[in-house]
Image (cartoon, rainbow, N blue to C red; front, side, top):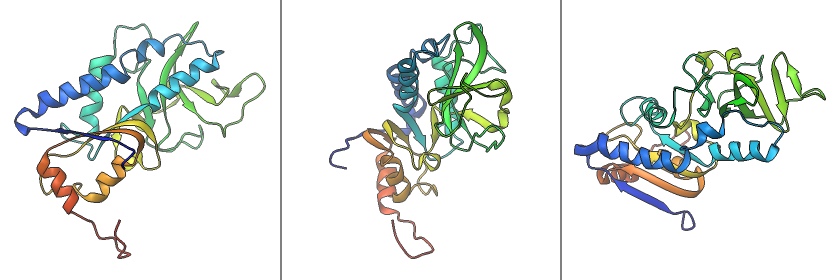
Length: 243
C-alpha cells in the first residue's frame, strides 16, 4: 500500500469515549455535515445533482469489526445520527429522516432490493414522501419513469417510498462491518478495531480486508498492542491456504 496512505490514531483506553467522540465529530464534519440539507426537497430532473448526492455517500465509510460495544456498528451509527440529523424537519417516517445513509440487510425479491444495497433517504421537491434512493442500473422502468406502484427511476437511480420497506430489511450505514464492506471501494475509510486483546476479530486478515476497501486514505483507530496482535495473528483456512 505504498500509494495508499494509512493514518493511525493510537488510542488510550482510559479516554476511549472522549477520543472516539472527537474522531467521529471530525469525520462527520468532513463528510456528513450538510447531507441532510442536500437530501431535502431535491430536484430529481437534475441528474448531476443526483450523481453528486450518491458520490457523497460513497466518498467515505466507517468500518467496524463488530456490531456491539462502543466501538461497534450500532453505537457508531447512533453517534453519527445524534450529531448530524436535525429531527425537527417536517418530513420523517418512523423516526427516519432525509439525509440518513441506509443499507439493505435482508433480501426483498419483490422490490429487487438485496443485502448490501446502500443509498440515501431523500425528499423530492413538492413531495413530502420519504424515499430511499439507491443506484440500480439493472432495473427497467416505463417511459414515464415508473417501475411499479409508487417506485420510479431517474437515470440510474431508483426511488422507493420508505414506507414500502420493512424496518427489519434496512439499517443505518454511516458505519458498517468490515465483513459487509467486502467488494466495496470507498474514497476514504475510518477503521475502528476492538480494544480487547484476544478478541476473535483481531487478526491480520480482517485488518487487510478493511484497509483494502479504499484506493484513497485509511484512518485507523486502535491501540498499539491491538495492532501488533492483529499483525501477529494469522487465521488458518480449512484449505490450508493462508491469506
